[in-house]
Length: 172
Image 1: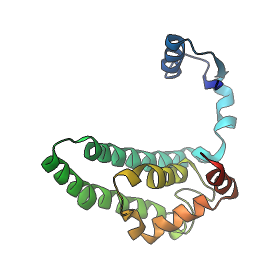
Image 2 (image 1 turned 90 degrees about the horizontal axis):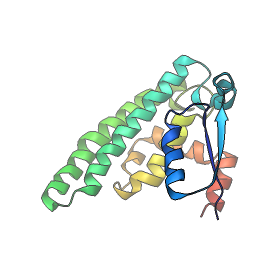
Image 3 (image 1 turned 30 degrees about the vertical axis):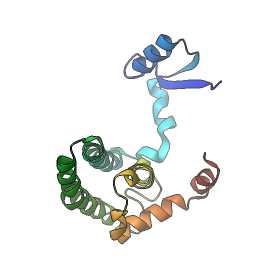
Image 4 (image 1 turned 90 degrees about the vertical axis):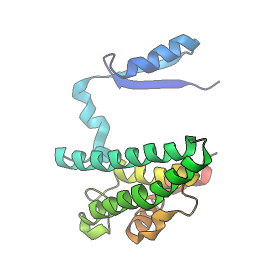
């Protein structure tokens, strides 16, 4: 049986939803509580090295969440005519405008030859790649993001990181 570990602040907050779910199903788990003063050492550089970088990472993250919400409307639509129109709108308007915006954000850091923020990979880069490679493929069979060489290069940089490449090789 799987062993679960919930890591959250030493408070109820959003972690309490997961605790309720574990309790409802009678699932045993390790409840790992983090003190607020220890948080900055745990989040490390995946959320940037300062507030401005963290804000930029959040922008990328939210653009991708918005993209996924629009993709979901396509996937879940049962009516063929409505689905076709949503798909057209998603490809021609949503995905294209979001991609252009992401390219602009990427180019604002070292002219697009590095990562979204700073000198190291962050949550923004990792989330972008997982959305592009593992989630959007259900809607975007043509991988239209590859039409933007900067975004394709970013994906290659991220999946080329040895630890990530190793995970990809061994994942189920």
